[in-house]
Length: 299
Image (cartoon, rainbow, N blue to C red):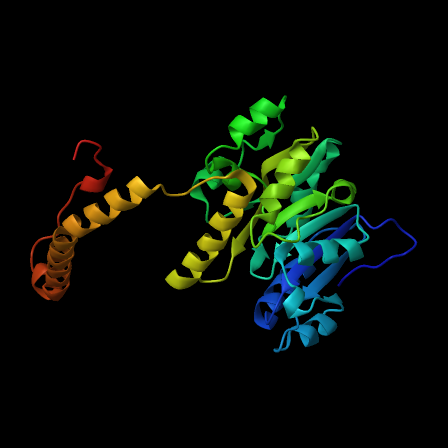
């Protein structure tokens, strides 16, 4: 599957970070195997000392394995290690849970690099409806001055637009100039993008190469991830996600709203279950004709 043709120039390397991801990797490898991509390419998995069948799956699909000890792991270090082993002019960075969609994913992801100023391309996540609805209007990010970039990187919106190592393609020669930060616990991809854009490069947000994310995070996992990202973002930009006065106001509002929210939830539940339990009775009535109210803007 991984095409290693030494007599030809390697165009693309796929770098995947993984720990105990045998099941997810099988799906990702199968999706990559189904690509209609005819240039030489390779796959490299940076394994964080997995204890499941991750390594066996990689051997089965003839994928190169690079080991990163657990006590040395950071996201940035794993990326640098994998890219350092890559031979492709371009590197697709994938999470083990990022599943490429469609047989033309790789072709679509690399298409923007015909522009020699293009340093990185963020792929299109199908769960982001705002970006998905405007897939036909890809946006290029490039700044004319440090002041323009500083203004654009205030708040949080820039972190949603910059390439994410969950699924993006970078130009390897740019990485050779600027590596990923190996100390940050998160947002190393956003910092890298910011530093690269400061050099005058261009980035695409978002390419029409689409992917889905197969991991289902529970509430606690989401909170842990958000804590890491906000801590890293504060180290990068000094952004404070919540001021003390906002905290006090939010807690006060929550205490006041709690009884009302609880009562509303109880009423909604009772109405919904009453509708369900009376279905046999409702079907004895004549069917209603006419358009549904949800399609009436004035309803």
